[in-house]
Image (spheres, rainbow, N blue to C red):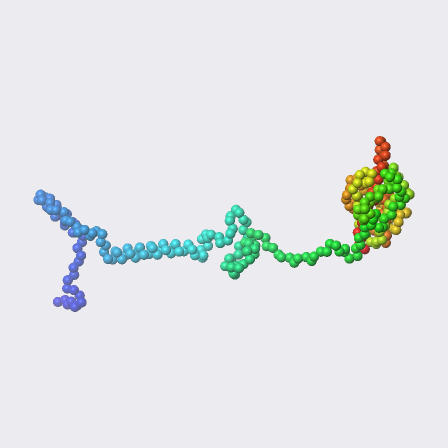
Length: 307
């Protein structure tokens, strides 16, 4: 005779099969229909279909939790800096199409150690403005001091170093003085020879400079009318000596009628100790209507010399 363990039940009850139950109900309805009296349909208790078995409810809850966790993970993963395909907004001030960015923008976390960074330096780092380097200020320049070994002299009527050779006074025909006798505001009108190709060797003006080296000569042309400042042109000789005579080392010409009120550069000339400039009298002081009384003007001449 078989024996049973105390823990084991003597009977086992199996759960009814729903399909078999429904088949039994169908056969019962067919029998009632054949008998002519169909019983009232069985009413199901309210809310029965909405109830889930505990095991199924647990599975649904776990599945919903897993789906929610996956959504949260995907959403939070968009802000990670490890993904190479993520696109982030630039942290600098570059605007596409407006400013050309530098080749490599600096890391803001490492390039800005403090909030007190110079705005100019910050803009330079971003490539917005070119970097500037502060240069030491140059020493002041004394424009009134001549270079070492340089010498500047001004000669002329009222200045010294000027001589009018063969001068005479005859109203508008002879030598005429102008100005107040001071250097720079005084000049002399010298009559012309009457021939633009010939000089009067007995009449001329000369300026003498006691200098050595290379001298840049400038001639002042005063303001005046044709009878006062009428050289067209006025011819000058330059001598490397004290006074005139012999062969000049150079010559130059100035159209005084076109340079009135100006300083005119005549060029550079070498001097071995004395430099003389001579104004010649050649020139035409007449036209078809008669004499014009045109004169050459003798004013100040400056020599800037370096040894």
